[in-house]
Structure formats: C-alpha cells, structure tokens
Length: 414
Ligand SMILES: Cc1ncc(COP(=O)(O)O)c(C=O)c1O
Image (cartoon, rainbow, N blue to C red; front, side, top):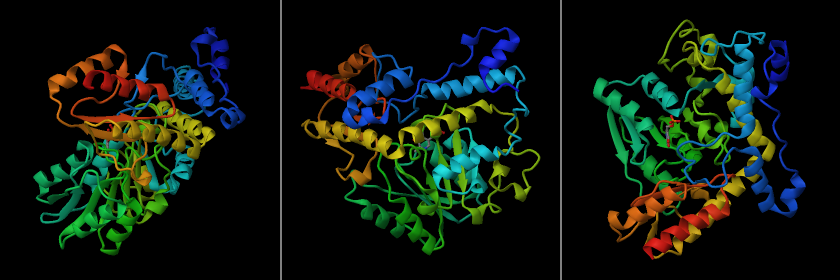
C-alpha cells in the first residue's frame, strides 16, 4: 500500500501535482514570542487559501478549512479512488475507532460516548427524536435557540403532544449566575428536558453549561446542549460539562471540512436513546455510540479532514487559538462600544463571549443601513449586516479586517 498520494500517482502515471502536496510547516513558535502579529499573518498567508482581498467575518455560519485539511480530504479521496487502501472506505457501516478515540480525547469524553454525524442539525435531530417523551412531558429551552436545535422538539410537540416552553434571555444578561438562575427556576413539575445552546447563534453568548447541567441533574432533568459553536471556539471538556447529550459542528470553529458533526451521549444514556437513521446494527447495544453511525454509505474523506483540522488546531495550541480569537472579538467589541448608535448585545464579561460579537443599530432606518451593506459587498467583506449585526473572528482574521468594518460603518453612518 502507498503511504501517500505521490506513490499512487507514480503507479498510475498520473501527474503528482494533481495529488495533494505536502503541507507548509507552521511558523516557528519563536516568531510568536517576538512578533505575534507576524506569526498570525504567516498563518493566514501560508496555511489558508484566503485571498488577501477577502475580509471574512462570518465564520459563525461556516468556517474555512486550512490547507492541511483540504490535503487530507483530497489525499483520502485520491487513494480510495485508486483503490490503494487496505480497508474498504465506507463510513456509514464503520465504527472509526481510532478517529473517535482521537476526537474524544480532545473533547474530554470516552470514545464509546462519541459518534460522528454530518453536522449539528443531524445530531440534534437524533437526540430530540430519540429521547422517549410522552404527551404532557415538557421541554424547556431558551428563546435564543437555532432552528436546528428547536425544530426537533417542535416536531415532537406537533406529533406527540409534548409541551415546549421558552425562557426569555435578557440581552445582554448581567452575569452567568443570572443565566443559571433563569434556566433552573424555569424547571416545573412536568419538565423532563432542559435544552439550550452552549454558545447562542444569535448573540454568541457563552452559557454557564456546567452549572446549569449540575443543577438540572440534581432535579432529575435531562440536559441537552447545542454545542454547534463550542468546539474550537472555547476550551471544552464534555465530562466536566456534565450534560446528558451534546451536538457539535466542528466545521464552524475547528477547521473541519463542511459536513462534519459530533454527537455525544453520556455513557449512562447509551442504551436509552433511539437511533433515527437506521440499518443493520441499529439495535446492537455493544456498539455503544457507534450504533448511531450506522447510516449507510457516506464520504469517509470528510472525517480524515476533520481529524486533520483537529490536529492543526492542537498544533497551534488550544490556548493560543482561543486567546487570539477572543482578543480580536474584544477589539471589535471595544470599537462597537465607542460608537454612539451601537447597542451592544455582547456583555463586557470575558467569560460570556468567545469569538462572536453582536450588536444592534439604534435609530437608523434600513435605507440608511443599505449603503453600508453595498460597500461591504464591493469591498469583499463577508459578515451579517442589518439592524442586528454579528461579527465572527478567527485566527485568520486580521486586525485590519475589524478596522475596515468599523471604518466603513462610521464613514457612512457618522
Ligand atoms: C447554535 C446552532 N446550532 C445548530 C446549528 C446548525 O449547525 P449545522 O448547520 O452544522 O448543522 C447552527 C448553525 O449555525 C447553530 O448556530
């Protein structure tokens, strides 16, 4: 078997450059020590395909995969198309033990508690569909949930007569304790499930997941966390969070290729959850969480890419990545705070936001906002613009991207 694509290329007389080429090594750590800005510039220029003219502040919807990730995907596809693999690449019937072990190690859970899915939506649907609830049982969630999180419960409400109740979250909230109090005091006699996002999609608010899960558990309530934004954006150990179920989208902040998802099922729940998409093995409890990966033929190369994304993140270092992303978000927050017609939805408390920063524009009409959006389009700035704004910062974001954003806003709106 060939260890790399070049070997396969040589065998088949294919031009080697059509196959994945070796990744450029990461810049030396000493560069970070004496000139961190030069270090991050080098990362953007050498590790990503982003052109210099692209100002990308929209990572919250879908991240960008760096070169090593693309190379891993292409390399795997190439080798499987050349039938150069020892195994039959057919995830959908495979347990991918090594991959899950590596990811579980990073997420702070057991391999047997972890399944790979295509995205968070799928994992969230599996959870909502798979927990046994009957008419009259109640699910409590926040009023900040993404449609992919809440729709599974709403469908169950329409179909089985469960009740869904929303907790109103103040924007911005005062502190994490207020969020815990709001969620826990909303639990009533019929509440079976507490569902909330670890980081909300609308405002990037970081919830005190551990405190909420601990208090809910003490009341015998099942906790389900939509962690679509968590892995890669904030430090994370699932075993410390203490939730029953968790869904994630590594293709947002963890450099994974689009189509990568995570489903975590706390060990004690492995036999309780019903799978949603099924084939042989659906009832084989010995498979543990891998039971939820038996879904028919799929693109295994995506998971090679997802693991390459995880390794890329770890190579730079989780702490260094978090610090940079948050530093840029804080810089954006400070600029927003200094703009009179901007009303911040992101609290000042560093614990309550990571790399998503949101605000509202006060006293400006849609007609006044439109020229700003037009300039963003012309200057290749990707962001969510309107009466409510969400900015995402990642390690490939340049301080000048944040400057350009606010300079444009101020030039047009004053
Ligand atoms: C909080 C939250 N949950 C779920 C999703 C759905 O993620 P995916 O598209 O990866 O399924 C998103 C996507 O933006 C999200 O922000």
